[in-house]
Image (cartoon, rainbow, N blue to C red):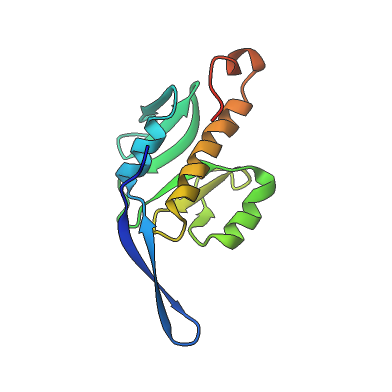
Length: 143
């Protein structure tokens, strides 16, 4: 599935001002992509202001609906990669109320390419599946 994108300009000041165009994924586009993963379900266990995406009854993404732009979402990451990813991508921050070892908030501000964001969503989905017992995991595709 291809995501529609909107233009987003980031300001980088090093030796003067330089504008770089990136594509910013919207909340609806991120939700649509995550919800279309095999056997993904959208739930609201924390109330109507937070959409929780699950596979096999386990969370792989949380999207708050009550945040102003740029919105964010929480995704699961491999613990051994998370610190390096946070250093490389300024859109990755500690997710409040989530384990900082496994989860990170991702601001949808255009600082990460669309391809990277969709890869992170698939990775979060796959990490949840990897934590399931082998017998249950056999019923779900790895992406």
